[in-house]
Length: 86
Image (cartoon, rainbow, N blue to C red; front, side, top):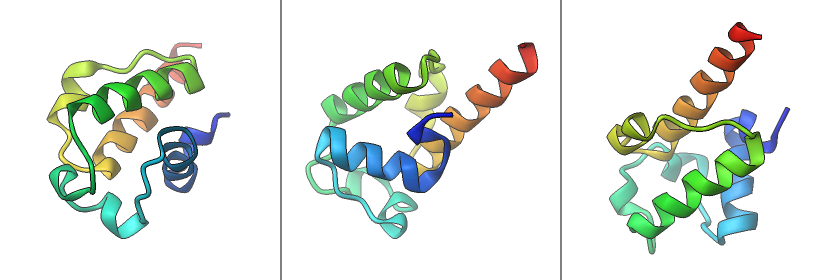
């Protein structure tokens, strides 16, 4: 289990490792509305989550996500896929 498995853990990871403060409410809003959000944050987020979980994320799904909640859903789906294959 990793910190990214729950939404709260995912948001804590972003706060602690990326310095991105996002409340649960902000996580449901559009990524472009997050303070300081840009494509570099997205790249750092993907790298961080992959390192934290040991799982590759499907980049096409991450790029389609419009909120942090949607990105977290990609992470959770990936976890379930890996567990189903084990």
